[in-house]
Length: 67
Length: 194
Image (tube, rainbow over all chains, first blue to last red; front, side):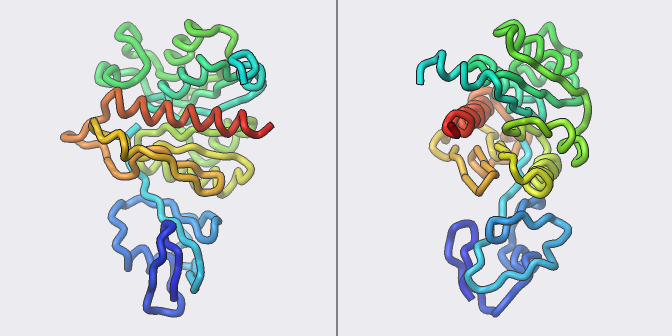
């Protein structure tokens, strides 16, 4: 399937994947993230219940200390 | 728009500032100078000497609560601006309560877990509000890496990568650039709606 991950096309060799698996698979390095799927917030505690399918738009945002 | 027209339009606007450190103090001062009607400042910290390298405070304010010291500094710039202060550590319930009447919320926390908490709370529980978050401002130089990302009602300002560390401290120029970009975006969102 093909998804749009952080505005970039990404091909994943599966028909569907949970958001938690996608984060693991892509090895996002920062420990704290905010995630959106098709523009909707997916809170940190429900990422393993959020299914990503072909054509979905996923935003994974790093929380960066400093302010 | 003239300066006066801008001030007129901003006069009834309310902006919430979550955190009164490097981002929050500089952003709030920029908004005050532009003529924002009301600011809601939330922070539970006291000013330390080490904060003066980037935060909009003065040496004789060390030991004061930042939200109160920032209110005082804003009053010295423009005493017509309404400033509401809360000395409290924000949690989801307080975010929705204290910022309920804001037109916009500026995320100006230092810690990543607090940034995540307020973004998830605003996007999840206050879907009609926009939040402008500062992410990535450590070190110096590399002006061209600082940008704005727009994701619906979430706006992220910063370089998106530099994390504060011993070898990469937060310094006045870059912190204030991001803070003023947050303020600039506040103006864009508030003034372009009418």
